Length: 498
Image (cartoon, rainbow, N blue to C red; front, side):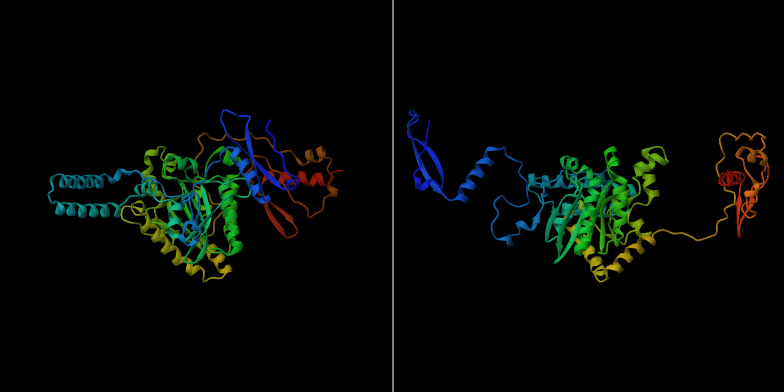
């Protein structure tokens, strides 16, 4: 057995023994070397030994290189988030109404290939085709139907919330957790700065591929996501950070486990709490905003929508299935729902429509982010001039002004044009109500115990035409039906029961 002996001088110090084999054939003949190390070094050595002995953990990917220099001005540490640009370009996706555009693109590619093969100059023909291409795109996107705008809003290559955040912020730190043990990846929150002003960012995050969509649950938040958003809102309200929220969700996650954990309560709590915040809130709809899942982070002072975004109570497919009994009627339902940004601006639900690059935001994400930044900062500078109480009152006034109504008196006795019953109601049998003597005898009622001004009543048979009786208590007069009169008699009888 190998052994190592130390001198008395090294008795109170830390040592490390390293066995160095001098000959592979002579295992027993080994030489030892003793090295005296400080306590801090030894602790690191043993700590490193323990880490190396365990299993290798999952490496977190960050948007900076593996070796980061000590100079923080390089910009590597400005964005603390696991989100980073994709290594490969997204695959082109063609919408059904974009086939004329695809045909022109195909012709342009063929002419360019022919020019390379033959060496001839086809620049004039290519220029004409490009002009034709731009004109076709302008004409096509200038007259999009609501269902076509919905398909653009759902485009798989459309920029997501984090794409816009990285394009418009100078610094960004992602924050996690609802402080109850959960962190819903469908809602992303964090603090970022724009032009030297710190904002709290909250938004729905869709995936850019199938793997990310499964991880993000297709931007359908659970109750934990809304509670995380509410925690960040309260944090921003406490520290005075203005809030910028981005909406891009088909709706809240409708599953049994979500309902068991309080989906409706979480959304309602957000709605109530957002009207009590005293910091400015600007909301941007960058894709589709579905029902309460979008409104839970959309109670704002200013509502902005991208040109091809939509905002609805129910999806056109669901509305068509309910009203028209077929999902094929979705185009008709989309037109009736008034879901586009242009329609909602007329109803003063949205305050501004942000223009998109030609062909949609996915054609030029940086330009789309630039337009969002300009619109958000314009409205934010206006709101920052208001006091906290004025900001809160402005938010409440915005939602109270939505919709139209008319005040008028309603005759409660007026007959309504109700739908007739499928089967006629049988006539009640002519059975008279029990007489007063019967009530007195059954309840041992004594009339002398009753005051004069308590109740004046009359009992009528069920088929009587008399509907009401005047009941007098002091100066109060109330109309009562036969059933209410009987209940009053019983109550008075029980009160004076001996």
